[in-house]
Length: 296
Image (tube, rainbow, N blue to C red):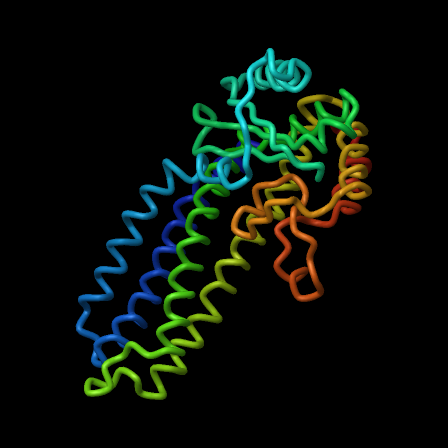
């Protein structure tokens, strides 16, 4: 468990370096496309901007995720059942009490966000609160607090922010490639630059999505195990997962960039999308819990 937490802290650094390198590569393509010969001005401008963005996202991505989900913070008086379950779990795990939010959405789901346990927040949808009994809801929230304890929220929060910026840069590059913007007298507008621009437009988001999906899948398995260890009731979490599979539906506010934050995949995947799923299949998660219940 402690090795997994240490690995998450190392992963934060690796992910930040990877995405900065990816943004730098996009910046280099911008530089070639705009100046023809590659003066370096645009490249360093994009790179510095990416570094500033990484720093900003580290502190603000959690709030952005809550805002994009339409989450509203609650007190104990607003929803005593949810608040007390989270409060009891925080005491059990020795974590600071996170801020608690509710998302008005009939799709059953939950997520945790924030840069560290001292700045964490957990959210549950109204759909989740309606279909879960107390032991199942406890299992779900123990899973979310496991993300906090294992420092998954730091990794996923940074990934969330950086996937957004890669998508923005790729979109701008696509528009430049198709509608012009290069200086033909310096080589910009050359067919080769168009090909490079299109390739960068396609490959950059794909690489970002692959990294996002790979990180999230392993974190979900670990959070399931940690949550079951906290409650000593893996059957309740397994039952909650089965209900998520049975009653799950796409969220009203679907955001691909924050799909990895949710307990269950909030987006209905197509055939191609399954290659980039941020969550392992629910039957696999249930099977792992029940097969290892004697260990919890």
